[in-house]
Image (tube, rainbow, N blue to C red; front, side):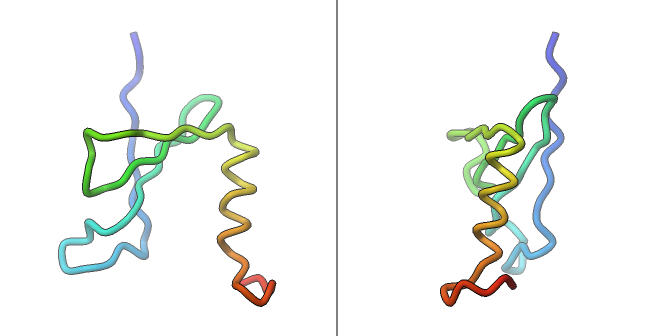
Length: 67
């Protein structure tokens, strides 16, 4: 038996309906990511270390300065 994912939206979700974002669901050994507009479509999964590195890269702007 599998446990259902608990999806979380970013507090930065845009638009009046708040559906323009990516959702994440922490799992036992990885993080799942999906597009909130297409829930039944593809879900990506990353190991925790890879996901953390991915988020850290997103925090750096084009000039190389952390935001």
